[in-house]
Length: 255
Image (cartoon, rainbow, N blue to C red; front, top):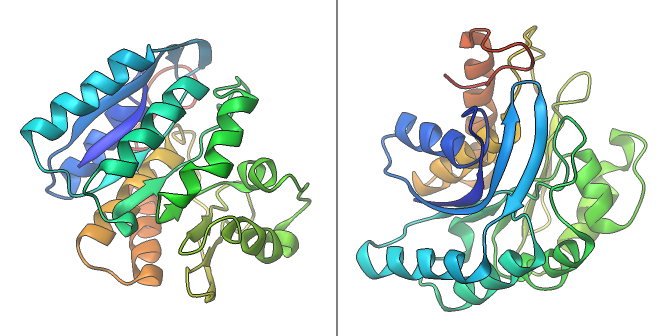
């Protein structure tokens, strides 16, 4: 399993969270770091994207050595990295339906994690190379260019996002909603609400990363689309229930 995402030194999100999810599912993970961050459970202080050349060489080195069964994409950090990833995926022998994009645009503490040029690359090129995209409500609004005021607008906006690329499955995560239900629009146009359970905890750092990585694991296991989403959501819920407080802010969802 390949994770292309940022490095969180507090191990709550990014590539370190992805590795923990892969290990929980009995899968081996390799990494291509897109950006270094200075952050803790209290928030993001600094983001420094890696150079495009280094990122490209990392990907080339990995695929020369091991077969990649699935790809999880998280924070990209820059348009340069997004471009390099697009070039890689165009030639990678990874089935599109085994590539999951978590479009991380802003941290939970409010720090911008991708510029507008990078956002446009996602919309115009990257969405056509992935099989799954897992935006939250704010990310859905940014990707579609339409404001969202609540879950009643989610199906229409998900359909608009799916319309940017044929064959795209869209999962709109509802962790900030009450109840925290997710919405799935499959590539075939099926629409399903996945009910969620509110967990009383402050250990919520990395929920988006954990969900999208768990979704990829379920897809690799052969789950049908709706079953894969249900399985990933159940995994996040169990992780929230089992979490222990770490740090002075929002602790990691997965130990």
